[in-house]
Amino acid sequence: MPFIGCIADDFTGGTDLANNLVKSGFRTRQTIGVPVEQPGRDDDTIDAVVVALKSRSLPASEAVEAALSALAWLRQQGCEKFYFKYCSTFDSTPDGNIGPVAEALMEALGVTGTLFCPAFPATGRTVYQGHLFVGDRLLNDSGMESHPLTPMADADLVRWLGRQSRRDVGLIAYSDLSLGEAAVRARIDALIDEGKALIVTDTLDDAHLDLLARASAHLPLVTGGSGLALGLKNLSPTTATDAGRLPTAAGSAVVLAGSASRRTREQIEHAATRLPTFTIDPRRLQESFDATVDDAIRWAEPQLGPTPLLIHSDTRPEAIEAAQSQLGVEAAGALIERAMATLAERLLVLGVRQWIVAGGETSGAIVQALGITSLKIGPEIAPGVPWTHAATAQGDIHLALKSGNFGAREMFTNAWEIVR
Image 1 (cartoon, rainbow, N blue to C red):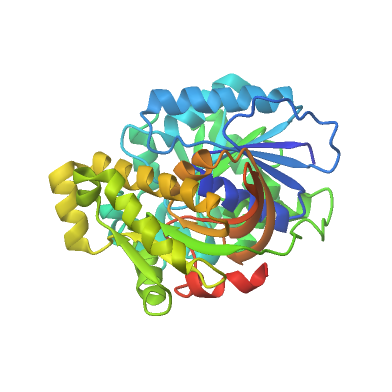
Image 2: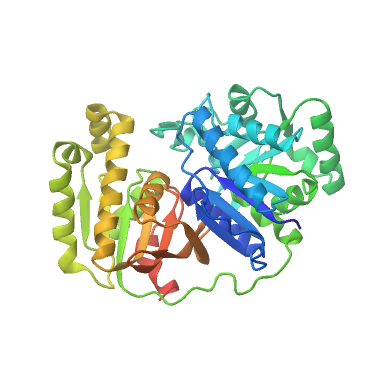
């Protein structure tokens, strides 16, 4: 298997993908943004590199520019096969930016077709007849239709991708998958020959991920959620049994949750009855940002220790609606991101060394604020959520970056023993 270069459109998504690559036997490094240094291929302990961007919610033109920059860097490192990773709920708008980024990568690589496989069956994301399901609900009836930045109003991925792309969209249907690897590979090539360069894939279980990974092994570029990486285990260069081993964690522990997703709300509700908890209202941040952050620090400092503290944005639906109405959707989200990043900087100085961060945008803001440029991927907490180990100016930390909808309800209370 050639050295794999991966581009993820947010930081938690990058960690999710890196986690699944490690599980498939790829010794994996994740970078935060496009590195300045040149790590090169002289490190033969690395089989895959994931460049995690913060581009999911950018305008399509800016997301394309960021992805092409990452691609150029990965090619300089000697990567031969490429993987564009986006959310398993296909988070995007009719204008992009999944389609535009994929098409730009295709043009840069000179390829005529690629797969779109967002499914991650282990987390309930499946695709049937081109329609994306979350559990037993169509995507547009799963809560994602109310996402503040990328509301998913249509579960038909062939139609949705077609709206944001210039090329025609095809489908590898369930009936195709039942015919086996050779038939699926032939179907992929036939669709590309017909001019249907963007190929959505039905996927109902992990066996389909394995089949699709094998059938698309000849393609220089694939795209999808992190689930497709699990299918690469049959193609991996090594078992890499020690790939997920990290040092033992120590120091104070904190959960910073900026996501308003349904699963994160459930995790907050569970943890709030068991952990010391501080709630942040974005409207108060607007009125007095510094005073609100100072209040949170004064509350946290005397309680810091091995028992985790929970600091979260107000996730009550009425509070979110009021904040977005008063401040605007983007401004309300940006305030929370800025507050969480500022809190992280100050808590790091106070000795916090174990972190769970909930929300893709929040995670992006925090890793940038802490100056983290690279993550070593460790043991899995839940599908798509590993512990990682990172260096900061204040010392090494253990960090779990959680996509909003991932993880068990008990994650904020039960995840710590894995690394202690």
